[in-house]
Length: 136
Image 1 (tube, rainbow, N blue to C red):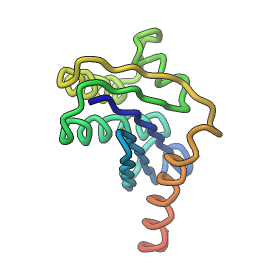
Image 2 (image 1 turned 180 degrees about the horizontal axis):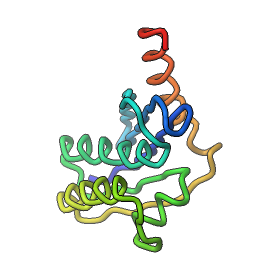
Image 3 (image 1 turned 90 degrees about the vertical axis):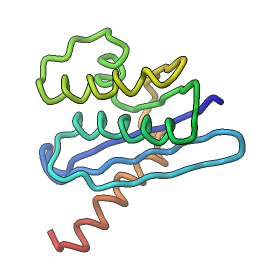
Image 4 (image 1 turned 45 degrees about the vertical axis):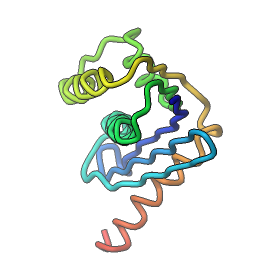
């Protein structure tokens, strides 16, 4: 089974309160995940969204994944075109690398922010809900 996954992550303040959004599409199904992740940078949130997506893809026994992200930096790091100099991101990259062994093929493609509105909406939903609940 092949999945099309859109992920996004963001932090208000960078660093600041962070949220992630994941949209998984396959067959005629669409799964959405939105999660508050606490204090984070934008890049950490982007990585954590990919991790959540891989964990969910493993649960549904996918074999191939096409990822779409609007972070050019993260796409180039995951495709090993750019080195990862930040220690926190290196740790998250290793988590992604380890989770990737569960799949036959994974691609990471950069898309424009306008093409990633569904995942972005989920990021904002996570942040808005957390901030409303805790009156941050």
